[in-house]
Structures are given as structure tokens and as C-alpha cells.
Image (cartoon, rainbow, N blue to C red):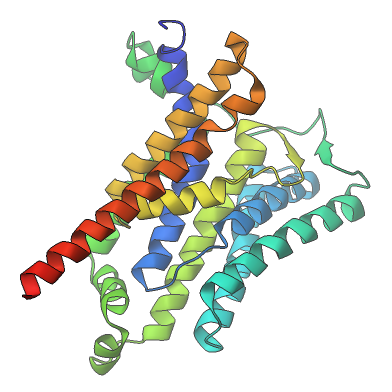
Length: 306
């Protein structure tokens, strides 16, 4: 048991939690403006593929990450146009975005790189690992916190920045107002649709960075469907964290820990099929928890109304 829970497990947890946290923060922004974005999975996948393409053509990691963020923003805006402009069902549009991203990345993988299944180039550089000065020398904290890619640190910083943005700035309050009541926000003269597009664009940017962390931070390659349900896990983390930046951070860490444990169990001769189930079992358990808590809240509201 002591070999299972050690410092390296927590180090792996921070690495695993990063793409989930970034995507969950993107889902949180959509939830805060009254949209349920089921297309997080597709946005991450587009970001992961675009990061590899950007790195392949530019040989510059910063441009590759920016290219990934930009590509996901375009897909997010497609989601925004369909749900905001044309009033389409957001769940249907989100599912369509997921299938479009899966099919398009598979097609472009064969068109650009002339390979099937996966693309790997041993000469392609991945994101660097940062050894934090001073912190890296602290006995227990150093091995956990130090030695990650810049996007890992960016994901945790993004949660704090979004908390300040939503609850300490005028624009953040306006976004929250749109989510609480669009009609009231519009009567106050707020540009509701413009604010919704801002939130959706930020959501796409975060998902694109999450994809870049997957394909350039954790591994330096792209495989078809490499998101492996992380977008849906991020969606559950958003709901479990009640669309609050700090709550999303805590719930994402829980899912990242489960993902790290499932990977670690493979070294204990536990069948891969069982270990791969752990994050999704936790997802189902979280949904039951949310359902039960929602039923209790409804019951309490009914009693108070009486």
C-alpha cells in the first residue's frame, strides 16, 4: 500500500489533473452564461491535434500552443453560433461537435501526416519540464510540485485568475448576471450575446490549451481519440464543483488522483481493463451524488415554499 501512495503518485496527479482542470474551467464559463457545453471532448481533441500540427510546421512550442488554442476557439465559436444565434439545442450541438472533431482529426491525420491511428516524430520537441528554483529543493514538496510542464502551472493559475475575474471584476459580474437571468441582464443594457461569445471563446481557449498539454506535455504524439473521455469527466467536474473555480479545482484534483491511481495499479499486475474503469466509475458515482443532492434541495425548497 505504501508503494501505491507515495510522492510520485502526487506528482503524477498534478500532471493528470491539468487537462481535466483546464477543460472543466472552460465548461464552467459556459455554465455561468447559461449554456451546457457537451462539446468539451471535441474541443480538447481539436486542441491536441492542432498543437502537433503547429509544432510540426513552426517548430516553435509557443506558436504550437497558440495554434491549438486558436483552433479550439473556432470550434467553440461554431458551438456559440449554433446555440446562441440559431437557438439550436446545446446538447445536440455539443454531441455534433464531438463527432465532427473525431472525424476531422482522423481525416487530417491521414491527409497531413499520411499515417493511420497515431503520429509520432522522435525529433519533435515536447513541452519543457520546469524545475522550480528553491521549491525543488524542499524535501517532500519539491518532488511533487517541481518538474512539470508550464501548462500544468498555468492550469492551477487559471483557476485562481478566473475566481478573481468572476467575483472581483465588473466584466465578471456581468457574465454572472447573464447566467442568472438573461432577460434581466438585457433590460439593464448589458450586451448579452457579446458576453456569451466572450465566455465561449475563453472556454475554447482553455480546452485548446488542455489538448496541447495532452499531446505535447504528457506525450509528444497524437493518437486518434486520445482524449479518452476527459472532456466528459471535465463536464462532471464542472457540475460537481458547482461551476465555481475553486470547487472545479477540487473536483478536478479528485478525478486526476483517480486517473493517476488507475495508471499506478497497472504496475501491480492489476488488469488494464479494471484500472481504466476507475475514473469512469468515479464519474458515475459523482453523478449519483449530484442527483441525490439535487433531490434533497428540491425537497427542501418544496417544504420552505409551504
